Image (cartoon, rainbow, N blue to C red; front, side, top):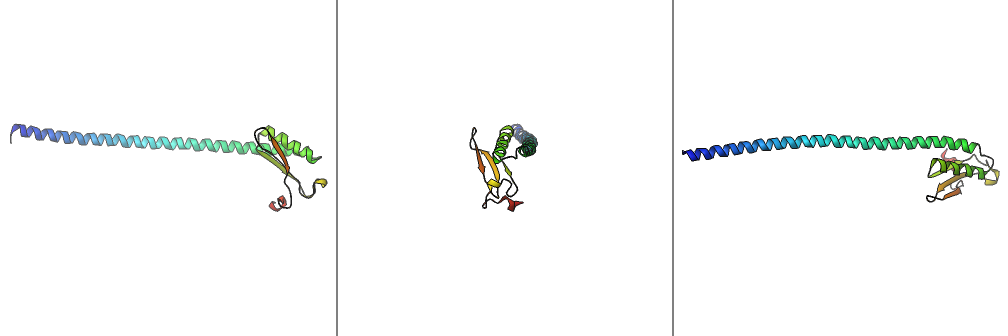
Length: 144
């Protein structure tokens, strides 16, 4: 075996071994980066879920407080159906609800018939609509 042939074989062995080390090092780096990315995406996902959960909880709390306030406001204004609508309008404006209603016992307001369910809602960003939605076809006593 000649000296140049031996040098060539050693060179190729060194090149193959170095290439394998490079592949192993690059593979290890890629695995590390993948795991770090996975952990980071998990953490980001959890932050998103926590944020959504917080928004839902705060919205539900606002609805709970608004409903309690609405009840008090309506109870102070039970003289006429118009006062009930006025109280609902104040509550929907103050609490920034999309809609609000109050349903009454049968024949509570004699002139309104058996069903009186005052409903007020936003038709757009500036207007509210008042509606009496209690009726035989919307018998809210069936849901109790």
